[in-house]
Amino acid sequence: LMMSSRPLIVNCALVGAALALMLTFLALDAAAQDVSCDPCIERKDIRIRCITHGAKSSAFWQRVKAAADQAGLDMNVNLQYDLYEGDEFTDFERMAEDIRSVATSANPPHALVVTVPTDEVAVAVSEVVQAGVPVFGLNSGDRVAQDAGVLGFVAMDENLAGAEAGKGILDAANARGQTISRAIYTNHAVGNSALEERARGFNSALSGVPLEEMIIGNLADDVAIVNQVSSALEGCPYDAMLILGATEALLDPILEANCPDMLLGVIDANGAVYAAIVTGKVAVGISQQEYLQGALPIVMAATYVATGQLLVPPADSETGIYRSGPKVITNDNVPSDTQTICELESYPTCPNELSSDGVNPSECACYDRSSIRIGGVVHGVTTDGSWDTVFVAAEQAARDMGVELDFDRFEPESSQAILYERMSNRIRTLCVSGIDGLFVSIPSDALLESIQYCQSLNIPVVSINAGGVFAQSLLIRSTLAHHIGQIEYNAGVLAGQELVKGFIGRAFCVTYEPGNVAFSDRCIGLEQATKRNVLASYGGGIVVPADNAAQFKQIVEGTVESFLQEFGQTTDTWEAVALLLTGQAVVEPAMMIKEDHPQVTIGTFDVSDSVYEGLDSGDLAFGTSQQ
Image (cartoon, rainbow, N blue to C red; front, side):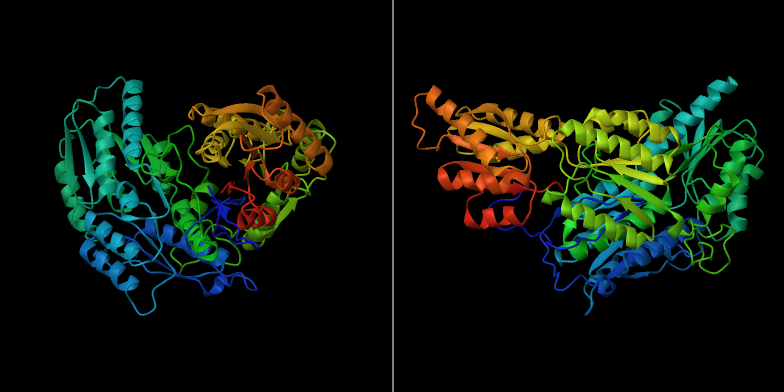
């Protein structure tokens, strides 16, 4: 929510962001960071440092680093990311000092990306944040990251991962007619909070089953690991076992112990795990989709440094993380051989033809992103300035990712029904033409049929902005990849509370897109806010044209004056009147109302130059950003 002073929002072309391999843009919110747009943002000068508890020899962390490196190239920033030698990755005291030294150096990075595996690392991160360095996170430490001040964190829900692994083992036991009476799990990094959460989740799923821990020593000592595993599994005393991680070092020794009746689950699944799932040697694998963990925090950090803007943490996440997993792998959804190879090679993007280790040639053919075509269809017409940034950001994101963007803007129509019909036709046309992905706004259920048609063609769809309720139903059915937008009802409540704060009178919701579910939800939110103020009441919605100032003024004045006359008040003063505009497209005609009735209180959704001018002059009480 932005108050009457000018908010710190970059008022020029924003940096777009990429989500996985499919292009969309991230709608981002203002944060307290000043940035310069004169004449443009030089992202090549942005320095980002990445410090994680990963070893150079770990194939898992090589994949994470490869994804981060590619994201750095995509965002055109200067990324420095070095993995630890040998078993240095378990020296968390050193890691904490590395984080401190980077932040307190003579030339600290513009942003830091870290894992937070232990409390001592969390303390170091907190100190860095207090020193003024923006910090983003991945993989380990989501439960302490928010308290430490981390701005955005991409990780698997570790507890859920352990629970899903346990559930998969139980399902396999039921299918075999087996009973689990004794189980064990491996721990290769004692003190790592992520592994502790996985173990807790596993324990909760196997409720009541005695559970033991096998602490692994030096992962680099293959002989010692084989001896330890063979000794622990001699005589096959366990009915179930879960590998918490370090799959490359532990899977083969455990399989070679030859306990065919022991049901095995593996967190951090890889190609060897997929093959073992097919042969029945592994009951369930858990992927945390480490590519996303490597790439997305770099995109977040680069975008924040360049624009000062942040995503709001997901409302359904207890720890505020953006979940990359768990993704449960069974024999029903094992990836193809090609997909497996490319996943293990971190999906190399042309001209890069190297494996994720950065040295050997990749067995996965590099992907030429210029062959990717993304379509976009939204209800933001040419006269609605709040959509200008969306179109500019999407174009920038397409350039960053090197993909083709097919994203045209509609002219205003005489009715919303006609606009929605044109949107539906455009969606179908794009999908029939062979686009590789689609992003849409869903202001009305009139669009659902065309969206579902595209999904029937196996075209991934992301929804943005309007239609969270419709998107949720599609997400539940697993037919929509993501929805990016604000919760419109909550936004209406917050804006309404600001509008009627210290106010005595009636509040009206002024909307220019009847039938747009987002606008309807905003008005419902305003109505709820008035119920929380005993001195305020809700006057209902006022439907106005989006592009006719004279009609706007006539309709609003007629509605308000009828209300004043009904309560025996003079129509000369509007002190008891508040107007909430559902979008900034009608700010200019609303300023005509303000000029004739200076006592009226007016707030608006969305921001634009005209909104900023109204905030500066005091004619507008506030504007809101959709993030």
